[in-house]
Amino acid sequence: MLDSTDVLHAWHRAGNPTPADRLSLYAQALTADCPIGAYRTLSDAQEDMAILALFRVDRSRATIASLHQLPPLALSGYHQLLHDLAREGLGPGGGFRGIGARFGQAPDSARHQRVDIPAFTGGQR
Image (cartoon, rainbow, N blue to C red; front, side):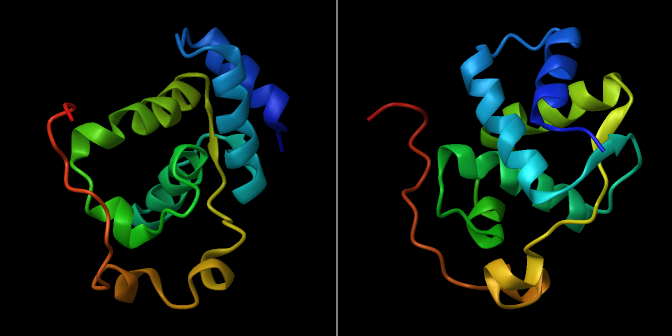
């Protein structure tokens, strides 16, 4: 399995333009939540968990429920990070470490919880 430095190097090889210090935070978050190795297809729930690990770098209290309330465009950068890994033949192994412990319930039931987050305002305040 790869560590965060390996993931950072893979993102650089893939040409990801995100600054190295930011990519390093994403790499640390992703490798802390799941093993990274050879690419394999993830289920929707596993992909959600990988995106959540990356999203928590920017919003530390994010949950699956809050993630599902965001417009797809808001998550495109996180999807791109996973896509860049896949282009290098790498990806999350799917063995996410805190699915039950972090949320206390199954991901499907978490989708129906009320989550108070600001509405998307089109990028202007």
